[in-house]
Image: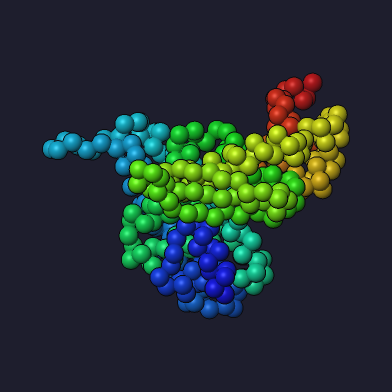
Amino acid sequence: MNSTTVKNIENIIQYDFSNKNLLSQAFLFDIEGGNEAISNTPLIIIGKRSINFSLVALLSEYYGGLSKGKPFKYSIGTDQINNILDNLESKDFYRNSINFLGLSQYIEALSEGEIECADRKLFDALVGAVAVDSNFDSKVIGKLLSFMLDIDYWLDNGFDNFDENPTIKIYNFTVAANIDSPKYSYKRQKDEFGNLFYKCSLVLSSVNDEFVGVGSTASEARSNAASVCYSYLEDNKLIADIKKDAGEFNVENAMDTLDNLALKGYFMLADYNTQEAKEGYKATIKIEGIENTFDGFDKEKNGARSKAAYKMLCYLVGNPVPKDEELNK
């Protein structure tokens, strides 16, 4: 890995390595017949364990309270704590974070062949690399996770409207527009009163402009820069209108409509998992990069896929998703 790539990745994750070799190792995936000892496999193991501990520590600091001589307690219910952890620790969440941050572009160039779950493993490996480089400093690891996962945003806004996160909206725009991932750069500055703050600059390859956001943390500054950028795209009518491009659709043409939208760059082509079910077939549709999946039921295989596709299409364009009984009338 050359020095320019190292510098780019350090900027993306907002961490400067003392041992640059650890960063390079995080991208060395173990392949069949490879050498596990020099791959990122040891870092993945370290990263997985570090993530679990650090997330619990972060939430305990955020929601916890400890009075002298009294038991530790959370300010919210333990079910809520577990629900937050389940969301933050999901494999899809890690994988999506690698994509949103623009780190996935380095995987193919630095590994041999296609590796299953490479982006998720990369997340674990990067955390493991930082853990080793910082001599397992829990505060450093926690800061990295807060930034990479944008934890403050999710704690403030919840996980229900996943695609409303400004950083994710900008990433989705680049996917739909078929352009390079957004590039973020950061600076720490002082205001007139001597208070430190972060300044984030965002650049898109399709827009001849720079969008700036500030905040008390790097992730807050990034979110604000993304919000400024998205407002610009909306004001200048640069956001693709998926509802308009979808046109009039129904169950019969839903699969073709989804394929056409994918070819226009809105999302990846859909995958259908079809299995025999009671009195027919059950089809489950999934699109890479989209969290929700939908099921369709019918006596025929194509009928089940069409109904699943129709549900997905309704969701993507913002229409109410019909219930099974409504589709089977």
